[in-house]
Image (cartoon, rainbow, N blue to C red; front, side):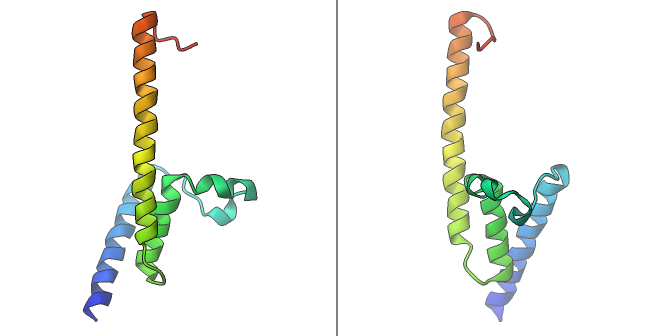
Length: 102
């Protein structure tokens, strides 16, 4: 009984966080509404795994740990990519003394 209560409160908190984040950005749509070729692309996007984690915590059919781990892994990958792009842009701006990247 206590485990179910804790799971319910965790799910409620995750849903609240999801709704707060979604209130500013209404571009989240179910995968079933997207064309088939976008399915594989969606698996490398963080919101897909965040929704899976929320769904797993709320329904309780499967533990959300895989989805949470994927969120963390993708966050690290996004950070590394962003860091490299930023370093490239700053180096190019300093080298060429311009903000033109062409």
